[in-house]
Image 1 (cartoon, one colour):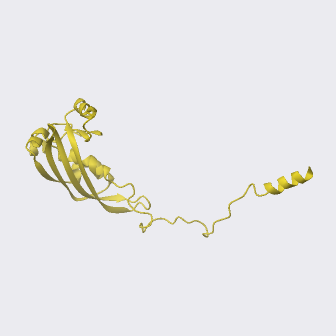
Image 2: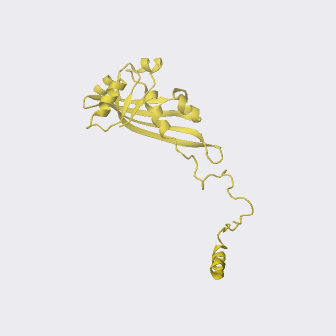
Image 3: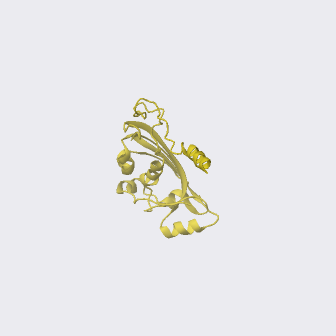
Length: 185
């Protein structure tokens, strides 16, 4: 079971939603949000976020505990690891998790042998779309932006005239030396 802590909600998010996570779960709420790159500052540090990030949230009660199923999609420019040129990539994130109000509650749920769902510690009681989805989008960033064979700007990995020199054989004369020593005896 994994536990992650989220940042506190902004005053704009508090006033726009006004509902606590528990209230949303009790009413089985479904929420759609369009978030700008500025609302996701850690994601924006990686590259330019195009247009808006589309996110959907479905809240529910799971054994009396507030839970969320969420999905988000973002288009972002990321630097290629081969050539450092910017490449546009789509990040898709999807997750389901229990929503704990504090670390003690998260630890208690994590210790529950019957529970294997991830637990997110929300830093506030009110719904904050950006805080819930930003970590998941960061986890969706690919380890390699370009494939070695696909990157048109990849530096040439061959050196010299392309011929591979013969590897040195430091023990090549050992057999002859051993035969010579045996014949002297």
